[in-house]
Length: 92
Image (cartoon, rainbow, N blue to C red; front, side):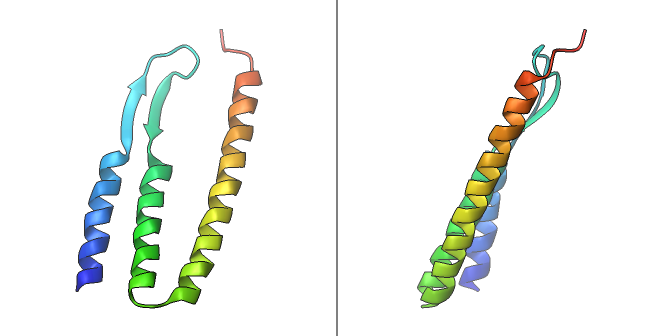
C-alpha cells in the first residue's frame, strides 16, 4: 500500500516537471518538450529507494548500474543528435 502511494506521488511530481510548449524560434520552430529525463530520473530514484527499503540490495545495485548506463547512453545520443541538428543548414 505504501509503495503504491510513493509511485503515485512521484509520478505526479514527475508529470509536473514535463513542460510542453510551442516555440517560434528560427532554429527550432514547432513544439518543444522538456523534463522527460528529469521525470524518469525521479521515478527511478523512487524505485531505487523502495528496493533499499525492502532490503533488496542486490536489485538496487543492479538497477543503479542499469540506470547509470541508460543515462550515459541517452546523454551521448542526445549530444550527437544536437550536433547533427546544429550542423544542418537552416531551411529557407
